[in-house]
Amino acid sequence: MSITLNSPLDMHLHLRDEEMLSVVGPLSSESFSGAIIMPNLVPPITTKEALISYKERILKACKGNTFTPYMTLFFKPTYSKEFLASIKDELTAIKLYPAGITTNSQGGVSGFDVDELRPTLDAMSELEIPLCIHGETNGFVMDREAEFVSIYEMLATNFPKLKIIMEHITTKESVEALDKFDNLYATITLHHLLITLDDVAGGMLQPHLFCKPIAKRPEDREALRKVALEGHPKVMFGSDSAPHPQHAKESCGCAAGVFTAPIALQVLTELFMEHSSIDKLQSFISSNARNIYSNIEIPTKTVILEEKNFEVPGKYADVVPMFSGETLKYSIIKIT
Ligand code: NCD
Ligand code: ZN
Image (tube, rainbow, N blue to C red; front, side):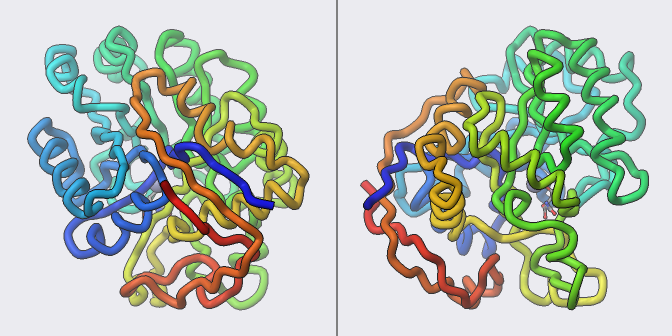
């Protein structure tokens, strides 16, 4: 039996820059039609010039693959309506990071004072620019996302016309928040559908599974699986594929991020097949995102997978992927 996916989308992707971009750009752009590109470079993307030139570098790295990078700006509370209007055609969303919460987020928001955020968020509402949020407080690591739900609720209530995407959700509390507010949506990663904290730190420490937000409890994974596997219309696939060089992962002070781009479609297919939900994968991987992000144009691409072993390379250049050296059950056999 073969499985056909139409125009797969990755609604949360780190492509980095320079050499790393040249390694990971082709891997995503080969099998995905488009991706929301995270702006946490050093320095982050905060100007029109930086955004346009990053987009050009991405397209160059993608070597002619049919692929649209959906560009984002790094949220600043000082963006004016004029500025946002001038960049709107180049911009798909704005990504908000709490200051210092993850890789390259030092310039993010400290404190969530609604009056301070209002001018930019009002402008985004009016211009219909979605807001993507890394939702973690600086509390105890296992509680950070659940504690942030009250901030999601405060923003959803104060800015009812703003589409708010809760990025890479990992908890049942975030799943519950989805259905309480019309304007809350979510991305879910592959790794958070598969692993819990036990897989990261229950035995020998697994640095390649260490990411932000950290994987949580079995009941949280269940809640994520439920909404992904039922094709819940407010959730979309966002890999949060976040490559770091091997030495930065296998070291004291391990960088956060799991690299899943080259194995995501194969493993999602296996997961959805295993749970007799393959008819819902198209919603999770593309159609829901198309409905939620009404401002994107999606190139046509057809990806066909079959039950055929795929040996995951140990490394892609200097980056170790999830399932490195293991054999997956499904392979991509054709992309047109
Ligand atoms: C991401 C990265 O490395 O840029 N890391 C991660 O653990 N997910 C940043 C992020 O999305 O938090
Ligand atoms: Zn991310």
